[in-house]
Length: 577
Image (cartoon, rainbow, N blue to C red; front, side, top):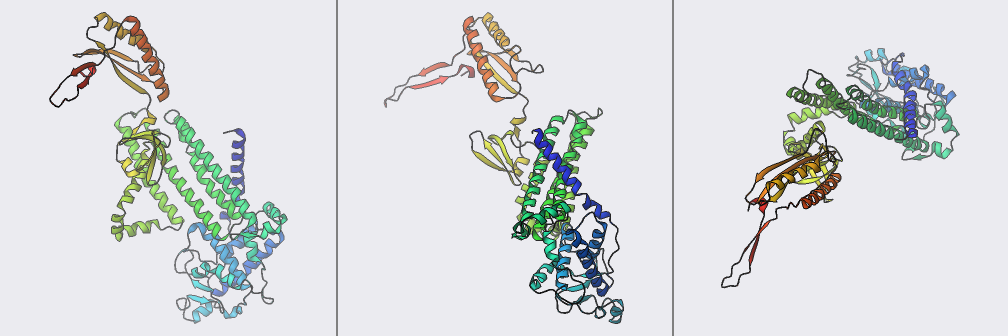
């Protein structure tokens, strides 16, 4: 990776970090809440807050995330929206969109006089809160409902059904003119909401852009937002890819060697997990992408962050286990070390499931409910899908054990090839014949796998056969020639010296066995060395007058009445036949 690309990446991360600070700052804003004790107080507070926010943004033509007044008014508006039934990741956006649409409707449809809207006294006169738990605004389908659960229990808010269909209600009356009488209106509130960024610099660029870029739409988004979205997406994806690449490179170099640096590499997946959040906040607060595109972006970003959280869990547990094993009190090759690693894998699996449960709940996927339903009433489905579940668990085991990686050569049940892809259901091998084979992950998880890609050396074991009529001196000379050719040979490791022994006397030949190890395990270099070794031994034997034992030919000749052909058989001296 060149220096220029690395600098661009670091500047991108710094930009995301600095410009996402208001997102975290706004959570600490303390503001007075809207009075939601009755439909009248809630509705009046909602309308007044929308008008106030509209006046605040008119001067700068954008919503200032650094302005406490803007954030305070926004908080009062969102207090009027019931979002308890919505997934957590889209509550703020859905509430904001619904609020803008409802205000646009109120600016076109005349509300009843305030004294005709129920307040606390009217509710008590009607028989209490139980008798007036829901009130519909006359002439509309908009309802205000008393919430019976959640953090806003016993408050009157715009109902869940109203929030879900607020955009639809607005489009039904969008062509109607604004009221000319009554409370102050906020014209083009929705147009501002979908087209204006929350940053003064971006807002100025958009303001100077051609109308086609500023207001023209493609698939529901203004054109300038598509450009910003693709640029931000490219930066986010490139950032995660670079971080993940650094993570794998540094972790592979330092694992088992430099424990402190290896443990510190956990920072990389943490940074990778932050990138989707920064991307989402930039898209939402600076590009102000709204509606369905924003919900898709938010869902994908949070799902990606959840998966990154699973990777962090596995990485953290592995590092803790390796740190314990690196202690002088633990034998790294002993049983305790293996038990620590197994315990780490089980712990990481449990924590990964917990992360998935929490992440699924945040994304609106009732994972816990689905698991409970499967346990109670989904037995038949579980039995029918047991092969799928078996494959899924096999995939999880492969992720935990990591018996091979993409790019490594393995041998499995007669298949010899390079791992090309590890999928959710199966793993693809590119065989040495160039054929591709697909193997279910559950079979790989429960079977023996020979990982050729992780071998430390290539061992050769070969026998040299010398005729029985060879004098003992020449047999000894043959052994010495073999030892001399392998002395400090190419690819030799001092821990694995070559071995040459006169091992056997067969009925047909003397046998000298040669064993040597070649490092590193490059197969083509190993073959080239083997060729040089064989030729050197051949020439040395030839110079010393030492012969190789050849297979003995025995010819059986038979001739019967049917003139059968000659039967010629070859017997190999090395097999003693």
